[in-house]
Image 1 (tube, chains in turn yellow, purple):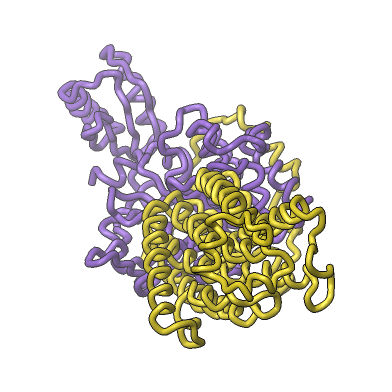
Image 2: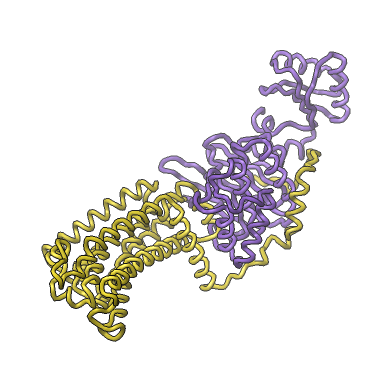
Length: 326
Length: 308
């Protein structure tokens, strides 16, 4: 046991005059003694304070993503993929009635939708959007959210945060930030499809009304919400992967491997046993087959399974975060 | 100066696999002058620092920082730290990140912004708020890191190698700030640079092989309680034989009871009256045409830790 003495026993006598200005400024700005050690600026108040902190972390995550190379690559990949989907898949779907749909609509009908399901949508473009987004956006979310933790831990940035926020708050903030990013991506797909429908038909609702049970707003709006809910398990899975990985590149490799394995597993299980409740609860991505035939509010129940998956992965990620060194 | 328990460790152990980075650290430190945490590579300094900050969890033992467990929410705003080699996120501006830190400590947006400006002003980098961290030099980056540790005017600031790789002008700025703020903030500084630490404090905790060594007590007690006065003389010559000859000659002086040359080349003289001995040394040097560069009371920290 060592108990050093409490005060300096000798002075070096060196005059540090060049620093007087700096320290004078420090004091002038409100730090002149013990009374200012405890900041008078805090407004800690339970859950409101917690929410504010998570929102600060979420906003930082969005800014970090947008400014990062990974964010730019993800954004570029998303734009290119979605442009291709609009051009080769969604746009031709609107020409079904005129017979000018081309090969894309054959694939849509053969592989994903029955003609009956296709025609239930207010416009065929919405059906094509639904199918394309259900398969495309999970991939985008996996790539985009693969580095929620790993690079900041490798760089030491998390150490600055952990002095001011708990590990769980950091995890929640980053998850929320990524969820917001994917909400924007989902909205972009929806709004671009609405614009396409408007361009094609000079109306958003060629075959139905705006509102009401079969109106375009509840059908497409709820479909977009369901779509976003199916992305949450992927984002939370990537939170877990990123918490486990040592480096960002390792997190990306894990992410791609997991996405491919789970997608293949879900497709194989669906093809072997068909879409059923047990399978839908088993893997993230499994409910996609079920969701294909649902429109509007019908999609909410299978999509809500995603919330369950997200919760499980987040709990696992929280356990990893709490146990790992930073 | 608040004189409550600053840091407390009891039988603190941290293992990495089979390696015991901390092997039963017992430590009780009160507030006061800055505390130097020294020791050779692999001694466990950064691990102890990381445990105190809550970056890593102890394998066993008890740790309290300002009376709280490391990582406790009660420490937010009271504990600041400059972790070694930690970097800010590269693609967000310095100002945005410091403002977020202040907000996480509970400040409103407006107060967080002024706090950001204040701490950057303290380290004389008021103009870098809009810059990206990558655009700063290493020294400026360290000063920004030092600035973040001051957000919210914490009670205790832990600095891990705060001047490693920093050029002399930036080192002087950081030292000046520590020296002047030591009256309001308790500092614990981990460093390999004993000359640097000696200029900042004489309170030393010496870690060796994951334990607090008795050398720490030697370093602290040397000038505080010992009855033997010491002088350290640095000669212009760097030849070991010349230093040894000078040490032998100085031993013959009446005011000096013993004198020896250290491996570093300094002469350490044991004296009863430091002022009298200093005068005799200067006169002896002048009489024998020996050039001296520095004459100081006591021994250097390096000599106290390693020369016995």
